Length: 268
Length: 275
Image (cartoon, rainbow over all chains, first blue to last red; front, side, top):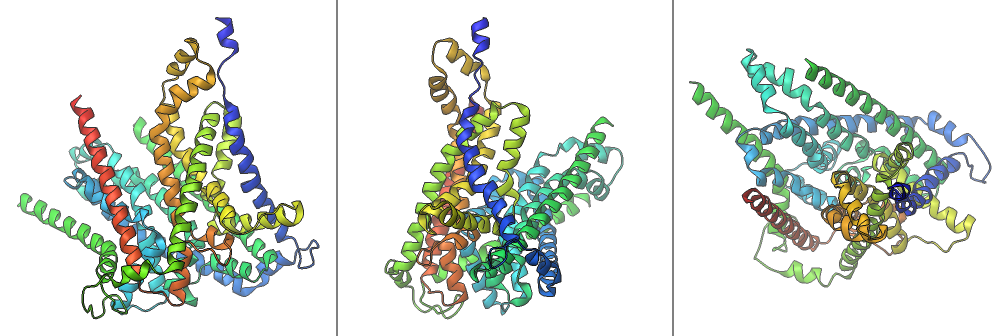
């Protein structure tokens, strides 16, 4: 008895190769980004790169513009994805598995090929490269990623909540806004987080579908990189990193709040 | 009266669903149609039905090389990340809570981080390894495989971990009580139960690798293209028509694999219900 307890099976060592890989290929690169951000062209320590971030009007306006593009495309995508998810999760559509699969299939097709297909069609309809073409491209590309989490959450909402609401006299509109929508918020938040920050790096879409007016922040970093300006590029990367952390905190604050309201709702 | 409004509501819902489906699939269907035409642009004068683009495709060495690179990088990195991710998930599963939190959080860094920052980091790491440490690393296939492995492994962990939590720990203990060593128990008792999750993890890693653009673009050498970088460069300059043939082949393969997979899943679910 004692013997078996002393050799409790704990194969934590199995994670060591992965931990080593994470340290070398994930942690060290982040440190290097920080180091390069403080490195001048001659290799000496400098604050110039960061000073430039906050004094260069072009960089700041591009950052603001990217936040706008990300917000706009995310909202449009949400406004289309939510009704579709709602319908797919409702009867009789929820019994047609193949239908929801059709909406998710594009996830598995190379996004550049889908953008190529979309661009051909937009040309056909006379929509030229530009700001709105880029927005359409972003919405088209991220649609399944927005749809899937919302659909999954809606599908798993206990039907008896809606029935209870209607039994207590609420009409279907009130039921939707007071019961279904709040319960589906975790899916909405996860959909938004699948799209908002990734748009910052989606310059492959905005560069091919749009023009200068729709350039995202990631394009600027990639351009600096092409010009071998690693110092300034790293400083901008670091700014983006701070933004990622900020967005994560906002996201976890909201999902924490919805989790609390859900708990309270259950107690009631 | 009520019945009528219900049927109107049903029709309205069908219209929304179909409208969005058409918006999603019209571009893909037009590409498939025009892969059998030599028309200069999609939607132009169709001309006669021809396989010319497919013949061109198999003569276009650059595009074939890009396809081959994409597949090699995808398969090799998915294979390594499945092994690395599964062993990591097993190790993490048995960790004490505090350590577990730290490892799980750091495994999410590349998942939540902006891709361009990850890509930049990989490149700076390569510079560092080559110029400061003195290792012979360079942009190219091997470096891309390493980079893709690193960015896809967290997703394998995310796929395998939930399955590990569902496993019955008594089975492993029973195996060890009956005299099998820990390694043997792990390989013969635990691993077979994880096989399904490992296959899902592999598929996820593979598709994520195929879809990657940013990390690949910043870490590849001038003469190595993947499908993503090839189409990107082409869309900005002069993309040849035979990309329509390649797109069609890829659409059809994805569609066939997914539908077959789902039919198989349905059959399995039905069989289990019968039991």
